Length: 65
Image (cartoon, rainbow, N blue to C red; front, side):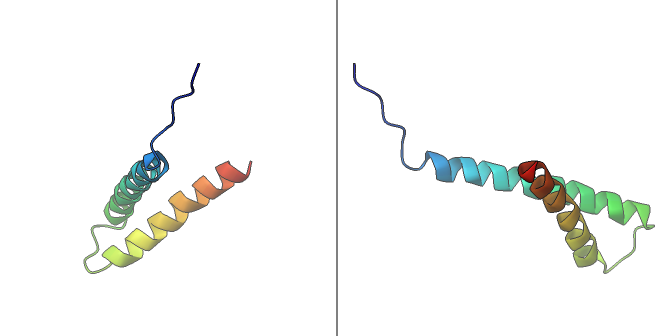
């Protein structure tokens, strides 16, 4: 019996999907922050960075556990 080889790009593809999923979660959280703060204009980067810190922080703590 011969083992089948997985394509070399599979890891890269999986990583792309993971990054896309994380970006979507950050986008959703940033919008929630935007809503909760009364739809403040010109704070989109602040909202994004706050959401990113939350999401990536949760991911890092769950990976470490």
